[in-house]
Length: 104
Image (cartoon, rainbow, N blue to C red):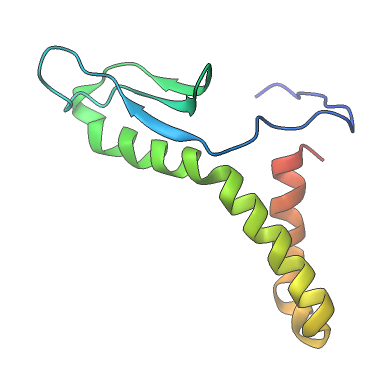
């Protein structure tokens, strides 16, 4: 995967991100979707009926990304403010996930 450089000013498209299932004919079973909102698309998946369930599971995870990042930042603050002695057990994972999401 290529290394995508980001400037400190660059941020992700704000949520909420929603799953939109493409309807081809009368079936929703082919796994086609896009994740986004009014006027924007974050991710898109073309039809692949054999992996429709996996496609929809991936769409759920992608659409939850802004909420997950916000929850991790809230957890980092709570742990730092309220239970710093126990932070050593989870803070490295929290910090790594936030850094990955922010491209650091």
